[in-house]
Image (cartoon, rainbow over all chains, first blue to last red; front, top):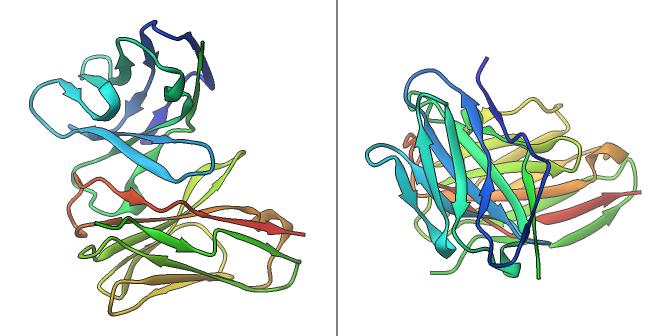
Length: 116
Length: 115
């Protein structure tokens, strides 16, 4: 069965330190991968996506993610965390042959807390 | 470009009542999807509409229904509300359906509380 795992419910990082939010997946073929962020009392905002090409993808707010096919991972990273990065982060995966959002698989979300 | 708007932002209803939520997508976007977000279940897909046609429906009872109008605005309706329907309902639009690489643009959500 196709699935997405965000193994950490919560990640705590000190401001200024690098951060990583993990995402692993189980999808056949070469998946499309997405990261979204949700700030308190807000909807989700698109951060970045991997479709094809360079395994390192750069997105909004200084975030980047690396697609690792052998480890079936798409971890979200930022070199220097800001307190304003504190939010809920979602990874989502889709089989490219499945074009409906019904078939978009969402992770459970990881709460990122950046401490001053 | 204005973002996705959802109205109302907050609703309080009692069990047995019905509710209608509204979503206006980004101008030019013809694909609208609805999601239910709860702390325990995460993000659950409700429906997807494109050009007034429902493309898919998630695993929700028939009390949950929706529609899309010719201007791409969408509504969802929940009848005979239950306590478990309390959630944040999110609407998302994208520029077209059938493009699996397109990201979605989400509205702020409607927070529904059922008492």
